[in-house]
Amino acid sequence: MKTAGREYQKGLFDATLVSCFQRACNERGDREFFTDPTLRLSGTDCYDQTIAFASAFNKHGINKGDVIAFLCQSSVLQSVAFFACQILGAVPCCLHVNDTSSRLSKTLEFVSAKLIIADHANLDVAQNLATKQTVISLADEGASNYVSFLAGGGYVKTFPQIISSDLGLILLSSGTTGSPKCVLHTQKTLAATASIGRFVYDCPSPNDSVIVTMGPSFAAWIHTVLPFVNIAGRIHFDKQFEPKRFLQTIQDERISVVPLVPTVWRMVLASNPQEFDLSNVSCAFFSGEPGSTSLVHNLSENFCSNVFTAYLASEGGNASGVVAGSQILNLSPNATGTPVPGGEVRVINPEGGLSDTLPTGMIGEVVVRGCSVSPGYLKQPDLTAVRFIDGWWRSGDLGLIDEKGILFIKGRLDNQINTGAIKVSAEEIEAALLQHPDIQLVGVVGEPDAQWGERIEAHIVTKGNLKDGKEVFSFIEDNELLPRHLWPKAIHFREKLPLGPTGKLYRKGLQRQ
Image 1 (cartoon, helix red, strand yellow):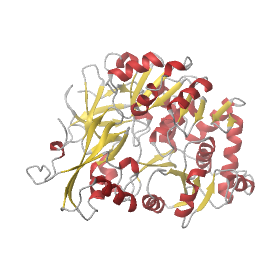
Image 2 (cartoon, one colour):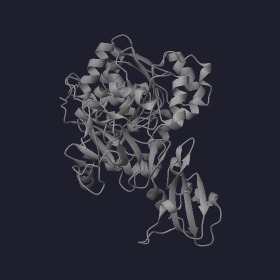
Image 3 (tube, one colour):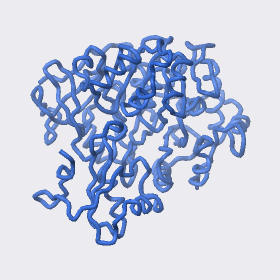
Image 4 (cartoon, helix red, strand yellow):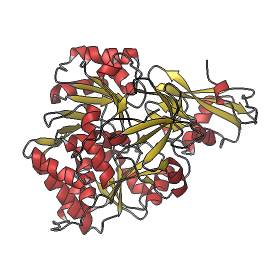
């Protein structure tokens, strides 16, 4: 079977994300570029503020290649500071704000962060975590606030030369154990994600606008923000999500592209979207899990007929993405689509190599290639060698390509659970639960859920003294073993767990059929 892919279109890419951002600010000029509920900046203002942040970073001892950690939600100031890192050549690493203190501390040490940028809601946590790092607050008052930080910076006349191979981002994957799995992206791979995004979101013009509610620690942030920077469109950030407020914002801000994961779309669709003026919406986008007939129909009826989905990954970026628009989704709502221009996708034998492609319609491991694929993982050369081969990335996802060249995702090779479009490891949750002194055996599985896609459920064999799930949750919380989004939605007490022929836990035997 041939590799699925579209013809590569030359001339799409800026050499670096820095040159992309500089061009976009110039093109946007006096028109609003970055906005949120409290701050609105034009293209010119964005660039001036970015230079001010980059100068202040440099004056405070941050140099090219140094890591700056972010512990904050999406906002105009967070985004300005992110692009200031790019201009200076510093490397942003956005932390998960809902993670435990112990895991955050481990991540800061692993990436060797020299500075922490925190918003007001996460400032106390950042200050408690900081052992070797300076903490800068994105609040405009109080100790170490960004206003005084910028005032002491002055302006740097010359910044380091930034080239395409320079490291531009450390992107944390979710659901890791031990040392964090940190995906590396260069200026080149980030620029490719920015440039190809127009095909992912069907956003061809600077008149387009997008709303961004996801946190900057998630890959979806760069997959969304960078393409709209590339087209010099308007980006509206809003860190507080509530369905009706979200709909009101789409109406008031005249948003044209609305990207959400299916779980959140279901909340929005249940909040009477017909009561709002959504006439400016030109693309309703979802990703993170396959669609359904009801989701595609409801988006078409309540938002716009132009519904898009994409298969995107932290390691892959937009230029290795697989995209489906309404022409595909109206016939096959659970389809993932076909590759973006220049992208390639194969389905291979999971036990074989990249050349072991499978026949049409047969399920195997999905592998992708494109200009935005990561060069690998930070400080994990062995894992990098296994997953990244000759420009291809082995996803660990199961899928098939049909006779029309359309990709369908069918699950995971490993035991990850896709809950709320976040992939979490069953083994990680099991390891945490097994730390309870009265738990003997545990098996964690994902069960179908109308709201979350899959919900986490744990099956436990105790040593005889444990009878109440509340005690388990208290133990997890008291010992900071798991962030709340990894807590099981249900705990089932059993006398034994099903085992396979080799004596290993047989998880499929726990799942409802």
